[in-house]
Image (cartoon, rainbow, N blue to C red; front, top):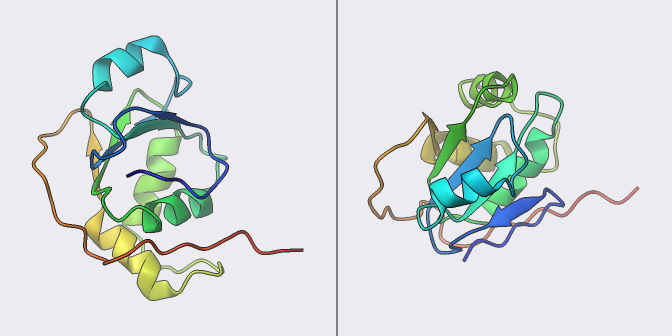
Length: 134
């Protein structure tokens, strides 16, 4: 079941699906996106170049069943996520570097639609990292 831990706005679809849709140019609740992805994705979220990768990584670690992010639309957010996924740098977050590596290694990125078979999660339980208190 898809259960985000961040305050990112998600448009929930089918919580047991393994595909998360990243809308690059529309809000996550846009009707055409909900119709397009309806039964094939757990949720839709928007991502702009200025948005937080930290929140996305936290939500993925908390939902090990999510194995793919599919990009829908055009926008600079695609490049930001792609650069992060293909990097070996480890941000100064409160998340261990091996957990960040899990996300990069086992969550695949797709431009446009992709096939979808059921895949096993690669970490056995939800890994949750709350926001640091100030």
